[in-house]
Image (cartoon, rainbow, N blue to C red; front, side):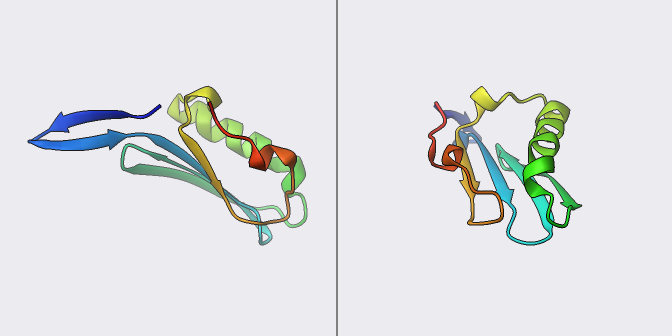
Length: 90
């Protein structure tokens, strides 16, 4: 659940969205958190399924966010296909 705060007379939505991109030989992970973006992109060739979780874990660890604290996950069709892509974040 995201939060709203009042800042300078305006309501701001506080949320965390994780984005995954695996459709090219690059593997990209980005976290949008309260208007700021932190991202990682690595040239992985055909090794997305081997390396995606490690890249994701490192990014989340760096910013101090747990998977359970995400408000949503954005992804595009890519080389990594998984039933987890259709799972909601609660």
